[in-house]
Length: 218
Ligand code: DX5
Ligand code: ZN
Image 1 (cartoon, protein in one colour):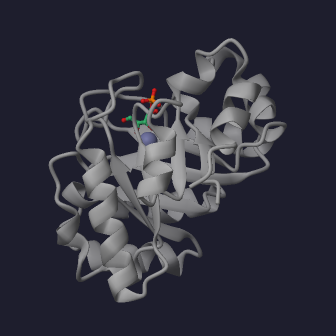
Image 2 (cartoon, helix red, strand yellow; image 1 turned 60 degrees about the horizontal axis):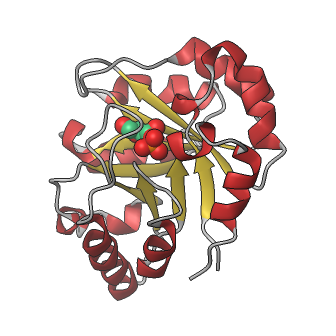
Image 3 (cartoon, rainbow, N blue to C red; image 1 turned 120 degrees about the horizontal axis):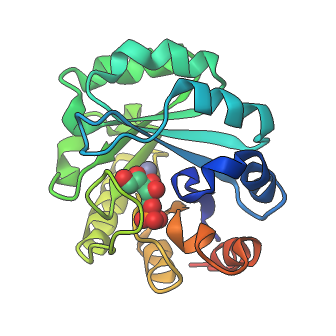
């Protein structure tokens, strides 16, 4: 089976966002990946609600929003109102993760949890059945265009095993440094969703780059 492909808009041309949204709409991509950074949880600031509102007016696929912010609970309802479908918070930013997950679902969204490269997947053992998607960060969050961390493969395999053991239906998303060099191995290890920013938008032909990722099967 092929993975869901989620181009990261962080690498799009912000002066031509409508054009790049149409590109993703008309490609084989499955989702839009939207990175929200607050300059506190990560050392960078990306974009927030007004930009997501503009994207939502043009995007006609699932909006997968990755919150790299402290205290994400404050904004759950706001993102639901903007039309976000999958809302991912960082494990490291949530003191009461279980409560946060319930709050996301109560707003009608799918709940995702992202793990920094140093965070062990076993920490999700007691919440796995409440998590619709785990986003394994394969770079340190904050910037596009970084190199893929090789330890990611073993994290994917461990998480996949945990999901199977618990009979959970949690999806595994990989975010950071995804290219045609690692995508097949990631899908083989158990990845369900591949986020790709620079690899897609810095390529000669983003539409065929997306098609290439989509053609990879386990
Ligand atoms: C990094 C972001 C990623 C980023 C991926 O903090 O979460 O979604 O856009 O970009 P690439 O694919 O360029 O590593
Ligand atoms: Zn992301």
